[in-house]
Amino acid sequence: MSTWYILLFAVLAVLCVAAFIGLRARRRRDDDALVRDSAAAAGADVIAAPTGSAGGFRPTGLGARVRSLFGGADGDVWQGLEDLLIKADVGPKASADLVARIRADYRPGDDPVALLRDEVRAILGPDLPLDLGADGLDVVLVVGVNGAGKTTTIGKLAAMLTAGGKQVSLAASDTFRAAAGEQLEVWAQRSGAHLVSQDRGADPGAVAFDAVRSATARGADVLIVDTAGRLHTKQPLMDELAKVKRVIEKAGATVDETLLVLDAQTGQNGIAQARAFTEAVPLTGVVLTKTDGSAKGGIVLAVREELDLPIRFVGVGETAADLLLFDAGAFADRLLG
Ligand code: GDP
Image (cartoon, rainbow, N blue to C red):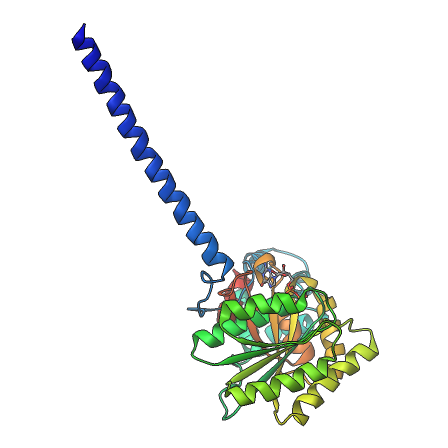
């Protein structure tokens, strides 16, 4: 009988030890998750400069469709090509231009996709990184309609610049939209940038003025100025943008770059928006956001051809690391891939 007791006791002891080990392992997993969550809340997980460059967008399958069009026996291939380009959001002017260029070069037996790739590269020209790095404070003004991804892009850009060793200040001149200031504050904390803001409803020009003065006093390298999301059809709002630019200059700085943030998914409507902004302030480049959710890369060519603006960056997601330098070669591969 006592042997049974000993055996039972041994089994119970083994079960207790196993339960204890299991509990400890679980607690350690929970602790790890807690550490990860707090790091994420503090933004510590996402601060990294992009390691590569990109064209953004999902592959479109356009190359295969062009080959099959040219491999077909009948039909007007040039009209067919123009239709395919328009469907890829290239826009009527850029599509007609591209077809005319390819038609002039094409000889029977040529690979139309290789020709198209060369022409896309020729239209886009060399990649133009941001023109920052002059002595003193560089100012980047960021404009765009609400929801395009302006605040997120400013946060990503700040993270990229601080990771590259720059001292960055942010001006919360979008004093109109509720929560815009708070959103920018979170990004400032994540990226280690210094934020200058005032109460909601304050004069956007006054915030920009303070920000230039404070960034200069701190010896910052770059000041990125957020602006209220414009309804590009509302003239007074567009006038206010021009005023923010004038105030920055009055405060003793020069606006080196004015970037328009465009949602890649807005297609040709984005081109109309961009035109309205160009009338308010001279733009120096475009950031195309949400390219991760779009296969309609043609907008890149429409921006280049119809607005004559370089694409500086592409947004490929929502974290700080998801802003990449635009790479025309990589883009051409994606468009035709
Ligand atoms: P704003 O009103 O122009 O300042 O726009 P926000 O910066 O608030 O962005 C609007 C929404 O778009 C947010 O949910 C962002 O996380 C999201 N967003 C911004 N850029 C990107 C991007 O490149 N990819 C994806 N998938 N979402 C983005």
